[in-house]
Amino acid sequence: MLLELIPQNARTVAIVGMAKNVGKTETLNLLIEESEKMKKKIAVASIGIDGESADLMFGHKKPEIYVYEGTLVVTSTKALNLTEAKVEVIEDLGIKSPMGSVILAEVKRAGGILLSGLNKMDDIKNVMQKVLEFHVDGFYIDGAFDRRSSAAPLISDAVFLSTGAALHQNPLMVRKRTKELVELFKIPPLKSERPLLEELSRENKMAVVYDDGVEVLDYQTAINSGFEIAQNIRKEGAILLLNGALTEQLYRDILSGFRFDGLTIVVRDPTCIFLGSSSIKNIKRRVSIKTLYGINLLAVTVNPYNPASHRYYGEDFVKDIAFDLHPLPVIDVVMRRCYNVG
Image (cartoon, rainbow, N blue to C red; front, side):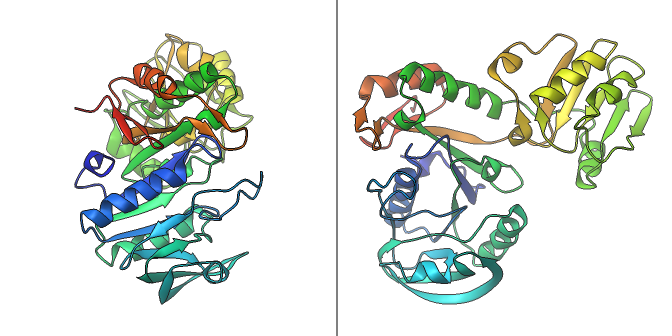
């Protein structure tokens, strides 16, 4: 169901939730279960804390993360005291967290497990490199509900996006917000000037690329400088490379300061774009937005049940989301039904 959607060259897969209780854990459990059936060697980790028996914010019961013998897990030492599965520690990864040291372990007896310890992007990158040294078929990362960073292409080869009834009390708003985020994730990479822009991006530099040369900008950040940067762009058809987030205010400042037509704003990847729906839909003719690296969004998983309010939206709710996102695959993680597949 989910496993068949993952390309063979995608070893690191992130699960990104649009809110709490939208089915991230169910999605992860389904991936783990399918991998066990296919005899795949996998590793799992979480940004934040996942696998607790009760929601730490709302107090209601949560599904546990269930792992099988042979699975590699990245978690913290204190989390091991709250874990049903029996594990053997392989290595202390040298990362400190509020839950103790972060360790890599192998499951020796199947059971529920609490995953915790990872928060910083650099730590996640380092752990990913270490885990892949064990030649796993898949490394599944459960991303924090309030952060999209785990979807970044420099972290994940592919992404499942989780949405559901817990996102908003109005089903129409769930559909609207889900479609908007999917559209943002699908903003395409730039095709021209890639080697140059990638090198500048690795050096965390901002620049304006013209057809006759490159001007590296003497700014640490574009925040509060967007109008000035755009005003100094000397002709149309330029490419503006940013080294951080493209926010609503920065976007408006650039639009106000740019005096020509045909500016292309480039950010590292879609997780750096924080624009409202009206800005994404009404990108002006004078300015377009591209990325250096695209997100490989495999599917959207949907939880039609909200455990906090005990509200169930039903099968039609999932079908409506599938209609909105066609042809992107949509999976009901409660009923385990697929839409837009095959």
